[in-house]
Image 1: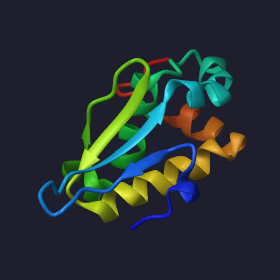
Image 2 (image 1 turned 30 degrees about the vertical axis):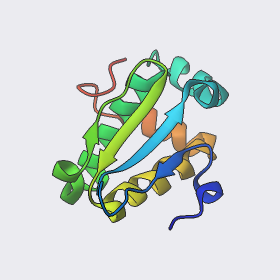
Image 3 (image 1 turned 180 degrees about the horizontal axis):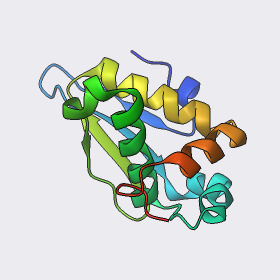
Image 4 (image 1 turned 180 degrees about the vertical axis):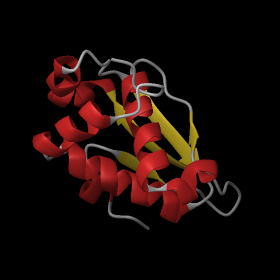
Length: 119
């Protein structure tokens, strides 16, 4: 089981024996803490914006996981699911690190593929 506080403010819910799907969340109240980084680049800082950023990062930095991660975000919540806990945890660590390093988050938003994170 993953230490939930290690990924805060992201929430990782691990599946069970009957439900092998794991889920990673980020809620709108937490997104507000770094919204200005997105807005500086005219990118949306809500769930869809985080999904676009994550999709771009997965494709550029974790291409082996593209087919393992399934996005289903809404405006107020970033959501990604997977039956592959390692792939989901790797994405969680990548996003968590960027969330807590404004320079890194700025770089990721600035260089994100505009097909996924329009600016």
